[in-house]
Length: 600
Ligand code: GTP
Ligand code: SPV
Ligand code: MN
Image (cartoon, rainbow, N blue to C red; front, side):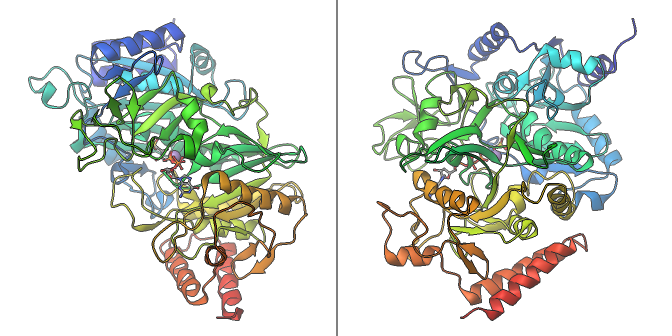
């Protein structure tokens, strides 16, 4: 019998990387138990106290391997222009030669796992398949939580389905005398990290890191970078968005998707606990949405993932009880602190700090310690089925017709609490201008403002400005009445004392409430230079801790600083060498002339 293209590819990877053995992953529960037990034996995972946190584990990474590494992430398209100015680019042939050297013998002494996975329910027309080869059992265990791992995917691929090849190695072969110069429980090769995407062949190669988006290749690498390329070519959108379904007091259901940059509140918003009478919020996804037009001219969202890989610090019963409930069992924690009774802790979990902990580096910790007990980018990895607000039909094959799309950054100034776009093009303009103060989810200085269009800066697989054109085109393909309304939100505006003005979290429902009233035509809003904002009294602020001044500050549109902001957007657009669609240039000009006409 001749070998299938899949088998030939796997053989070739094994030939290159030289593992001791090759194991095909099936996705069955017994196999996952076995992998987890092996990780505990190897001390990569610590089993938590099974009475307090059943079937849950803690991993501590090498301190040099704690977040995605954007400087080492590459989009290798044939033409540099197709990667655009926001991506790192290397000529594909040059990169292939480098990778060949890096991956040569890199799995020696290790097991090479072959993971057939689907992003999206296998039988959905919106699903896409991948094969991840990895020498990290931690990745195998995490992929089983985050994606649909199944032999059925392998069968579909053997039968001719489209698939994305993804190769991952921690980059520490065991055949050398110095094999254990790095942390034995968390092998990695930080100096040589590379996360590479070949645009035309839609391949992923990742070397040297075992953590998060660097290694769980179904997530950012496939579902966003390669996904956005597939979406461009096939007429859909791969987005860094949560998906939630809101039922209004009138009993009507609305689907919202929202793009906020990394560590800017997607998980929290997706799991919002309503504090207004009659509202219900259901969690469909917390990080990635695939959006495609359907036969009704509506935009349909699916969550291609099956789990949450959420930020731990700041998660508490007060901020996100839903997440706390979800992680009560079956959770893999990474880089959080360990309590003396074998449970987990992180900054913000409780008001009072425990007297003693083992911190994320494995050292003794007390409240007097000068470093945080949990790493700021520490995470929980938990199946979506653990979430009590996720409905049984969350992964229905037909997806959810989207009513509103929200864009939000983390902005201390300028951007109002909520603004509605005047049109789809104005909404795309808003998305293109998202910016955020840098967070701990990526390497780099925390607090510096950076442009993060559509929250996709680290995740767009092709020229960002061409991606904006694609958004305009997809909008055109939708029916006028069925096109989602677009809104910009900002939970993070600060007062002159540097304090958040808006209480956020559950109170964000008040913004949702206004948006639904706009969708239903129940409120008229007020035109401002930057878009439609709530008119006096339209935002339900009953029982909110907010002064009259605070409310004013939340919606303050300062002409001088907005003109400066518009100029910055213009400068930013210029970096795209003529790729910015004319419609967005027009939106910028329109904004400038509205600002000019506004009172100072
Ligand atoms: P990624 O998983 O990295 O993509 O992050 P995310 O967008 O899902 O962010 P997440 O919901 O985990 O929130 C990150 C941080 O923002 C946490 O520390 C939250 O406590 C904080 N946060 C979330 N929502 C709000 C809010 O409404 N107001 C304020 N002030 N902080 C918030
Ligand atoms: C993000 O940084 O947006 C994340 C975490 O969701 S990671 O999977 O590491 O990319
Ligand atoms: Mn994310």
